[in-house]
Length: 257
Image (tube, rainbow, N blue to C red; front, side, top):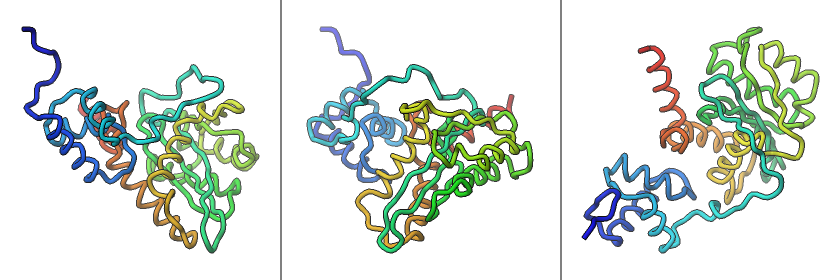
């Protein structure tokens, strides 16, 4: 009788279910899909099972994230916004968060398209053109070491058609840094999908289901999540490595070469 292909394990479905539950408990994030569970079991616990088996068991025991069932609608974007190296394109976007005392406050983020690392963020009451520049400035200091003229020459910045990003002040400052604006298509948010998806993940993990008394509580929640995300969030396109791990290994290999 021919043996089935694939990883061999002595674990029964019941035992594997227990391992999956334990992994979901130890994860610092919520609502993760079966691929990340499979990756952690393989890397951290050295449990070699197929992804399809993990998917089947999680489905049978209702452990799948409800978010993975959402279907996209409307016109499909057929291009790509993923880069093959860092500091080729960043994305930026803004979103609002409700508080008890301060009403709605704004969160602006800047995200590296190559490894989805959040390189800059800013929480502020009013979402002005000046506030929209703050995460870019933070990212430049973090990645390039300063905010001098021409420091980021060659970097593109993907952004939407918001009034903050269309303002002369924003565009002139980006030009002074050497950054080339790259506007997303009208009514096609997926063309700014890296920043949009990061903001959605942040809100799912750190904002939704919580009541924030004021803007300072939002800042603390955002700061803590971004640090945890950059260091621990597993990204499928990076071989289930975190953004920080992928960046560190990239530059180690570049130095060795």
